[in-house]
Length: 375
Image 1: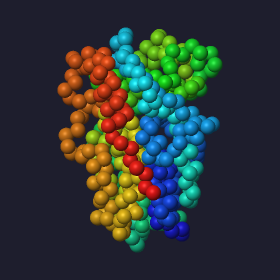
Image 2 (image 1 turned 90 degrees about the vertical axis):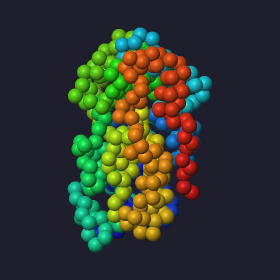
Image 3 (image 1 turned 135 degrees about the vertical axis):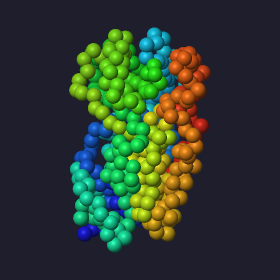
Image 4 (image 1 turned 90 degrees about the horizontal axis):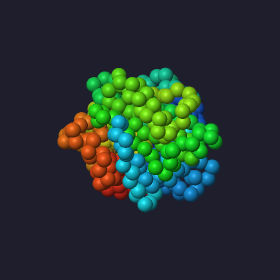
């Protein structure tokens, strides 16, 4: 049986970032994922410059042979409104990416042992170590496998338990030359459309000839109904092609203010979506995933052992970075309680509110500096 200092379940941005940071410090790491890579990942697909800074990625180098769509504007409206607000930030404030490229790029930077296309069939505790699939063992097991990560189930709150789960459906495809020419959506201007009941929002992101369309809501039983209405409206206004290939894929995730999963236990840590770290107001999860991996690595490298006590500083670092979950975070994931439906329509028509609050604060988190990577 092979022995490692840490086993990471999940090879997405969180898992690969943690693996690369630990191996740089001389730790022996195994990273496991049930999917082969490159793999499709259901996600709108955008990152801020802060993410690139934290990962030490040069945007010019990354964009060679990969999609990196500069975003300078946002077009924001409420479903049913005829005139959305368009805000010009006059600088690149975000980038559109394709997850199949981005995740593979991050994983290829990892030199540690990788076992891809390998599901986790068993996890047992034996003599102070975690034994996975009766093949590998380590004193530290890290869950980085998203909302349904098997490691998360070890820590109590199972997916779909008492936690409020956001459900989303989306599709990403390459438009034909004719579709790309006719499509009114611009690559540098993602579109965000809020549901009238404030329980979700839809989006249209263009990345060159690739188009991503989706909608996420807290009440999944009406998800398809809202999505169909949104797509029909976008077709009618020329924002998306009349013919959409393939089926919309579903996924689920937890918002930071709603998740109840513990982050650590003896020899166990959760990072990224497995820990329920998506931003409460936007649902964006890539930056929290990257930053949680860096904070976890800092904790691991400073810890004297893998006990829950030694790993507990990770939870404190998460709280310091993202706020405390018990601090009265609003139940509505897009807008706080004081933005009632009666005034939301007016606010979403406001140039100041859509720019300063929705985009710069809730989606871009511009007031939060990039987390410095460990050196």
